[in-house]
Length: 295
Image (cartoon, rainbow, N blue to C red; front, side, top):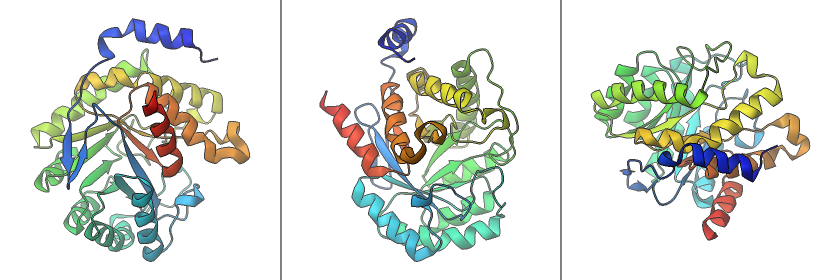
């Protein structure tokens, strides 16, 4: 059971990391002042395989409408994906992703939204940045030099996701290591070095808590790992860049109230000093963050 004693012990053990400051930057006119306030990323899924039905849009018009709604609800970034990360989901090649993504990216970017594209395909990255996207939500590790150069060429930002494999669709069992936070820091330090050497200055790091590793199907194991990473997020900020978290669902615990899961995990992520919250439930997350800001 999570308790104040556990939180106090965590803070005491890593007191030097508690007040670490991170880079702040502006992307396409939107300021990410991560040392003073968090930001919200709303989600649009263009794949019918995505299970969070409220975020699924099966036409460009529906996706564009949802994008406008998310901005009005308080999202600073709109993240769009054309391939579900679920293990059983249909694989969508670069051409197929572009056919779904480009009309939505063009229109939302034209309207002034900061658009992020979730992909691990270089051809999708290139086409979407040319269409107006300004953030790459990078869910793979292969060909990263090439991907980072594209981001830098467009003065864009990147979300570097932790993936144990070439990409999010090619993972097996999750290797926890002796200290998961230390493992994450080592990975991100390497990737940040590659990104900055290729000219990228606007970086978020994402521990990848929503990805479907085979040995994380046990709900207690998975949720314990997610909670632990959320609460230790402040230790990642010592790398000098803000942290993005995709908020999970814990359907096994929440059942019919599954839409309450992301606000619950948002609280833990906020306690750990998360900077960018990726969510399907923008108004609920905004309400949680606004309430915490009162204290």
